Length: 481
Ligand SMILES: C[S@@+](CC[C@H](N)C(=O)[O-])C[C@H]1O[C@@H](n2cnc3c(N)ncnc32)[C@H](O)[C@@H]1O
Image 1 (cartoon, helix red, strand yellow):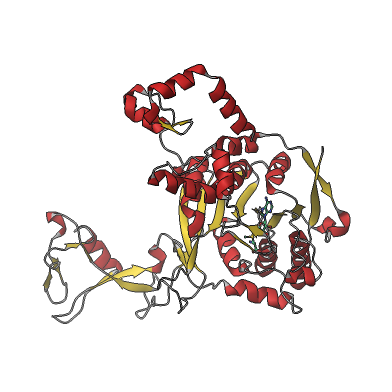
Image 2 (cartoon, rainbow, N blue to C red):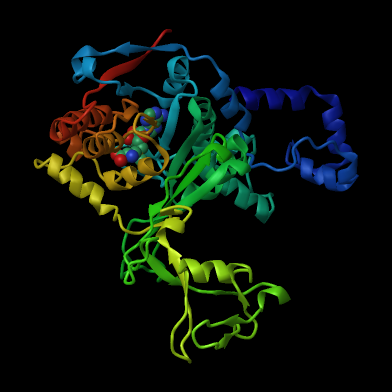
């Protein structure tokens, strides 16, 4: 509103601005100067353009400033909501994550290995939490200081429509992503769950905050199965998990175990298990099309047309002696080149970007076990999914921060991991004190806020797992004003 008034006052008072409109009415949209049209009129090269490539939206500057403003709040320890506080490094913070991220800088700057971000996806619906960041058309036009969009061209109308949908969500997520970066260790990563609605915007602002060179990859999580009654015969069955690093060159991703079931040692080779390797390659030069002679039968082998031996001629004698190259004693059979398991550079392979073995329903099923009386939170992330992610990027002593904790699936996953592998990972979960609607199932089950649900799950899951570090220190963010 302040912005709107100042623009109007500016227009009314500013003689030159009015003169410009009289002189060049075609570069104006109503009372507003259209910079793009002005640029086209005077020519791009006569313009100093400081921005070259970015996603922009109304209020982006304020969103940036929100990350820079001091936090006028403090963390207050709440003993009676904590669980085994003396035996645990885990933290639960009740309050807005914007404040929490600022407050955590004091003790956790560059200390967090993994930040999980599972924000509201901006579906325009309401779950236990609000997921509607859309602005009403009139409010948005007022925001932009437009009287109406009647005279605006079609492209601009599309932009205005998109602005209504995305502006508030971007204002919410942008400062938080900026603040996350300060908390990451040099080899730390931030993983962000999202679906189609904000994926494109999210990736662009993450490129801006973390640098495109620090984009590690994007998991496609197949979380649903196809529904048969889709009106448009198109069924979206996946969501995304974007991975950004503070510094990609330092990130270690554990990868997946290779399958060695086809390795064996039928000839008792002293070098251990092996499989037959392809001795030819698609590329090479004249020198790699030499004849190989079978020492038993004198048969001459050449690579097939268009292919080359995958090794140099000098290797043939050495490998024949060592038994890596095995020749048949009868004519008409091919030789074997052995690939030993012991020769492999790594016993692991890169992790696939597609996760298809963990259905989303698994998260709900887990809650049904913890809450036989009825589940207080819909669509929690399955702990198996989180464990898979934490396992890839964290070590035994690392800290995982979840800034949109919801039902505290992260805490549950860390308990499970610590118990299963005797590790000592710890978590920090942040959840605002969003109140539940009195009509909601959770409210009827006796919870008044989502943070109530989260701490109760931590209590139940901790009891169930009783491994290392199964408690939590509860903090509440309190305003200093
Ligand atoms: C998508 S849900 C997370 C679900 C969670 N991963 C789980 O498995 O239960 C997003 C959560 O973030 C919370 N939230 C939204 N805005 C927040 C904010 N500014 N600070 C802290 N929590 C917030 C919502 O109340 C909601 O519980």
